[in-house]
Length: 111
Image 1 (tube, rainbow, N blue to C red):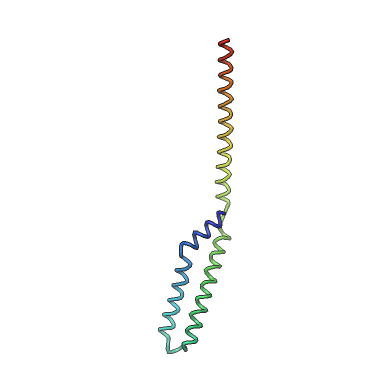
Image 2 (cartoon, rainbow, N blue to C red):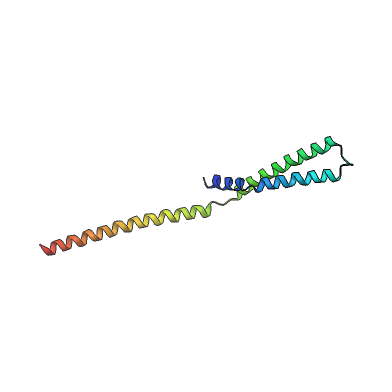
């Protein structure tokens, strides 16, 4: 769930789309400037292949980011919250017992 949310945030941020679009337009400009060296078919194939390669690289970057994402901090934070709640419940039970004992003592004194 944490990794899903993280990867969706990265994908929705648009950084990979920006990376691919930048590469696409850089390739387009390269082929436009060097138009006398390449035929139109070579230009189209070059632009398409570079875009596909950049998409593959961006997917590999995303998978690398996800695989290197450490869950140890999240696990420690979750354990801390769980233990904190557990301790709080035990303290609440102890305070309730203490109040009950105090009330019983007061009732015995009254009798």
